[in-house]
Image (cartoon, rainbow, N blue to C red; front, side, top):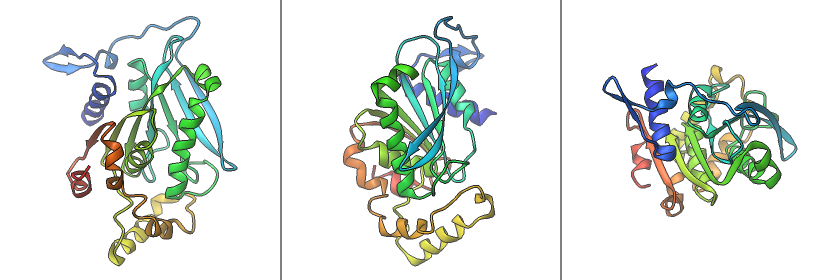
Length: 251
């Protein structure tokens, strides 16, 4: 629980530089513990969306904040296999007055299609494009000039690579981000092959070319190669044991 609250607070502080309130000598944002008010006309609500990307439907779950104003929107990018719903942080984000969007990449957790790194990048880009359309921005109360990406592990790398070149992505939070541009030796490629065959990945419909795609496109999938774009974003990287430091430092 402590870890969840700590990450939640870091997320909230970074998302909009909000003021904290001192409670029992700890800085805890009021959205953690205060009751929320709800607009009668535009209350906070949840929306399930089936988004079609290249002929496959992916799961999208939107937690929309209270009132009619268009709001900054945080998009959560899960890891592998990830949890089906990362809704603890999403609820905290919504309570702070921002929209929170969760989605499942193609080939994961019931979304149609095949899981590949390329598809996952395209899924995130496609989702942002969908949410940026005027009619959808109106429906979901989205400030299309201010998207924030929050990714963990696999999703952290996806957020850094895809988000680096999307103009209306302003901030990226990467929690223990994984670089899929590092598998350049036979030993590392074998490790990745074994990793992706783990029993706990039974819910993933992996592309037969997943590994080969990562090998062939290592330079494209390496977040370090996007540092000239990322320098124009606000980027926060959180790594629990600095194991990803070799590729994070160059950023």
